[in-house]
Length: 185
Image (cartoon, rainbow, N blue to C red; front, top):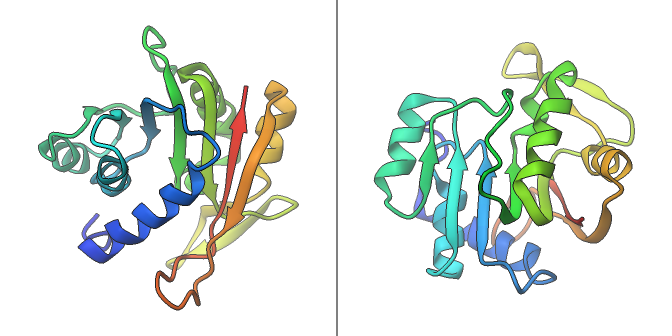
């Protein structure tokens, strides 16, 4: 939780989301699955203070910190359970979350992403054309790369709207080699 801090990181995410949302200008409401301390929510709030922001976070301390920002409605719940769909959002998204979900549990998170979205789904994760497990900080089975977007497209008959890649050697805003995909229902 503490390693993901700093105004520079929020600025980098601001740049990312400005790029990722350019093909979906009508978005007014957004839900994040796995918001941690709310850095993505901060970036989205800087892009548009009128966004209706909500998020789910399993970690109680991180959820409390995100909630204290007072820019989003934060639910302290796991995204591995069926989430309520009484409210749907123009956009549902994950950022660096799916890659930590065990492959056997991905279907539930995919279902939540799909059911919470009225129109768009955005994922920003590590990509690999075939599923692989990568050693993560000395632990096995904690980081997975796969074609998350392709799986969502095939499962729900979604359409690819836009995509891009963030490179760790970017001169101004280095990132962790993540690939993002904006999908539409």
